[in-house]
Length: 181
Image 1 (cartoon, rainbow, N blue to C red):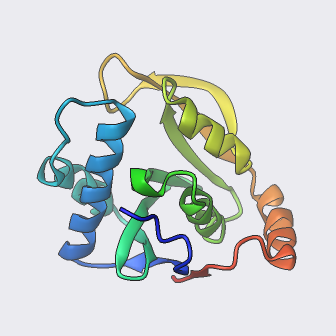
Image 2: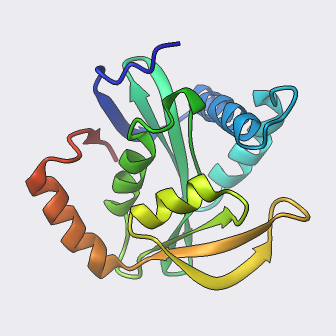
């Protein structure tokens, strides 16, 4: 399937059951590729996790689209004074095309004064590199959270750096995708 890099990327807030289903489909494909599963995970298996994360107070689902095709998503959940990225995934067919960076730029636009955080599997070097490349910093906090036997490291984003980056990114035109709220 062609990546469609020539189609503009739009990231925005999404609502409803169909949006959750689209996010679960991306998550199933991404997890299957990341973990080299012999059989692709089903979206229906991933949907309860998306719904649960989205059900929290103040939680929001954001989709990245190229045309009509959903190529990535994130779920943002207030966590104390910080904003936690509970899920962030791109369709494996779009890996390396800037979707993840666009989602993280979108997340940065929603950070409050205390910044943001996310947890990433320590055995996922692709994600670790992407988050570090987008200005996230790994902490010493490591826990088994969602998957037994697979520790996750907490990454944070300092909001002061975000505002400087947002100004320079907008001025340079590196990210021209529209973000929605």
